[in-house]
Length: 112
Image (tube, rainbow, N blue to C red):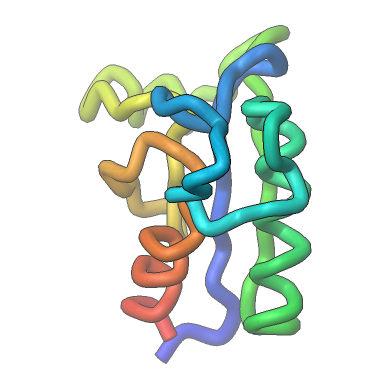
């Protein structure tokens, strides 16, 4: 059992939150960022919902790579070619490739 689960979202300032359209179907499970379709808005909503659900058992970080890519992220990209936005859970690359509440919660649950 991990103490705190670290979730890191990696993308660009101008990234969309998903390759799918932001519409009334809300397949991502989030509603506070509805219609923006932007990574930063979706991250803020995701953080709000996950902190309400898990409290201090989860920590979220948004890493924007517009002005440089940290070496650890470069290594991941060179090794695994993950989709953007990249979702890391405790440093482990997931293949989610979008901001989606249920899939990210499933990854968190694996770590708790």
